[in-house]
Image (cartoon, rainbow, N blue to C red; front, side, top):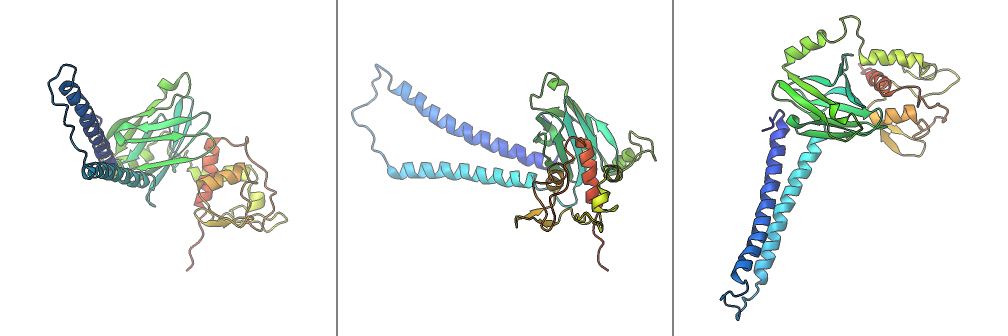
Length: 315
């Protein structure tokens, strides 16, 4: 029996059990009637055949309506669970995951890095922001009942809340190449104090590690982004007019087409790699593309830095 290590895993099991029971009941009824009639009216049987029973439209409508109601109820249950599983709470801890042939690279907001391992606290919502560096992978933790395709060129997210401490298997469930079978790992769920202790004693020596946002800021300066957007993302006052980045993440951005989009991870990624795709209203499309100049991990650090540029609250 696969352990149920998250709160939602219990409900997922109940839903699958209900689908299996409903399907088995329908199959048993249909094939049971087929077998019954096979034995009752086989060649040479003395069963009465001269007076066929009369059809009842009430029975047929009742049977059809009951079946439809049962499966429609299961559909609503599954749809509701699906939506809840992909809407992370606002206080979820974001952890970044990059899949590549044939390892999982994990980076925590504080800069702690892992290979084929993921440490996390129990009792706290965790949101994974995932992408692939090469081909399609699939992040799957059976004990958490989660499974999500990880695609190159875009971000995928999934969230969960571990309830039980322990070590659980991590798999790639998408055939991704000759070494696919070796793309496994371990998810370690820990109590909050143990997790904080692990963070402080992580893979890098204390003091030598920088947060993702800090590393992203260094990259922001090295790539020359500050020349147009300002050293602290405050916007340019020079000859090149570029939008301010402070408070950008999570805001609504009006485009030159008149459309309005939310500034999320997807929008920031596309703005860095495909700056001509969604041009901000009032600005010229002069920003060069950084495609090929930064890899997936560097992109995540840049976005972590942009997320950290929060607008100051008014007194």
